[in-house]
Image (cartoon, rainbow, N blue to C red):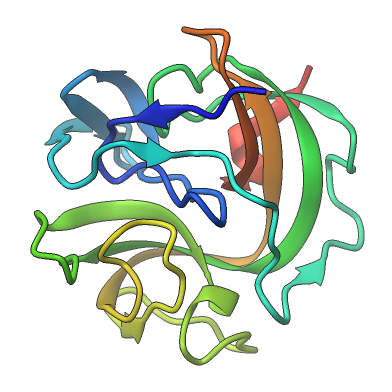
Length: 198
């Protein structure tokens, strides 16, 4: 099974743990990713922050992350991905690997390796922050320390919360890219509203 290396900004995650999705996008090209705001407007983001990132991972689950009790999609279900975190994702057919419950956040941060500022990166969850699981989620504008290393320069940095999905059902998904024969395994994370029944 192939692993897929892809250049994309505020997008993909780690070689060890799956990359987390970045900003929700409408379209992407080799050198830019387009973020979609809540009002439907989109802003191109240059793809200079990351390079040669392996988007498949080993399926490791963060400590303390709870399995969702009644998810819309169960393990093994086939879904269509409606998010475009990077090229070849939107419209892809995927298989649910796991469904979990947590507070999920989009974040902005400056990588510790000197890379460009990353804006509206989706999704980071409570269990990937220094504080771990929280009863009361962080609020927009809060500064939080990240403890996941899905992307070079992410681990240990202070990030700013941009948006919050409280008590979200988030999914790990396997899928084949629509623009190649490559397969992405254990992708973290897709929100429930980014998926639909196949």
